Length: 377
Image 1: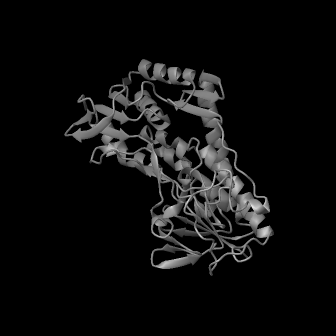
Image 2: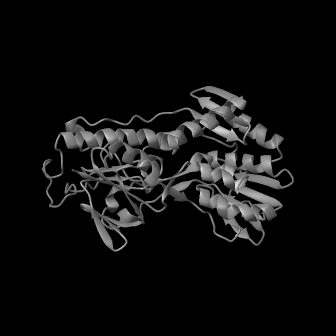
C-alpha cells in the first residue's frame, strides 16, 4: 500500500487524511493533537469555554491514519525528518498552514489565529482598559467586533494602513463593517501603519502614539516553509509560498503537493478554500496511484521513493504541472461565499456582488460552524 505523509492537521491536512486513509497508508504529522475550527476561535476572547467545542482530537475522527505529534524539521527526497527519526513517503502533502506576522513582540502583544492565542490573551484582556487591534482585514475586524460586543467599558481601537477596512471585499461589505464597528464604540484609525511599541504606546509611522494595555497583531500570516529551505529552496516563490501548478503539485516535483495557506494559489487564505484544495489533492493522489505513476514509473532520474525529478530553476505557468500527462484534476480558484462575523448576533454575508448584513450573516456563520464540526464529530 502506498504511503502518504501529510504535514499539518488543519482544514486541508485533515481533509486529505480523511479522503485517503481507506486506500493508502496515511501518516498525519501535526504539532497539536487535535483539529481546530479556526474561523470560530475569536469567540474565545469572550468565553474560553467556547474553544472546547471547536476542537476534535485527530484520533477521534481518523480511524486508520497514523498520528504523529511533532514538528518536521526537514523534507528530503523520499522522507521527512521528525525529531531524530525519518518517515518515508510515496506521496507528500504539505499542509503546514501559516504563522502570524508579528510586527513586534512583547509581553502585551498577542496574535489571533489559533485558540491558544485566545487563551494567552484572555487574562490580560480582562484587566485591560485600552486595547489596540492592528490590521483591518477579516481577522482584525472580527476580533474588534468580539471585543466591542463583550467589553463595553473598554476602549477598542483598530489601526489599519488602508483607507477602509476589509479592502479586498465588496464596497458595501466594507461600509457595513465600518458602520457596525463605529456604532459599537470602536475607534477606527485608518491610513496609519504601526511600526513599533514604546512602553504602553504603539507608535504609527506618522509619529502618532496610541496607548494600549493589550495589542493584537492581525496583519496577516506568513507560511510555514522552513523545513523546505535547505534542500528545496527553489520551490518557494517571491512571497515565500510553495509554488504549485493547477493540479497543486509542487513545481518541479512529481509526488509532492501543497495546499492551504502555504501554497502559492492566489486567492483568500480561508478554511473553505483549503478544504476545496484538499479535495483536489485527494483526487489527484488517487489518480497517480491508479496510473501507477510512482516516481520510478514516471522516469525519474534519482533513486528512492520521492520524485527524483530534477527541480526546475524557474517555475512554469500556474496552470502547468508535471502531472498533466496523466489527466490530473485542476483546482479552480475564484471568489467564494464570504461571511464576516460581527459579534455573536450580527454579520455580513457576501457572495459575488450580493451583500447581506445583520442576523442572516450571523446565522450563516453559526450554521457553517455546526456543519463542519458535525463532519468531524
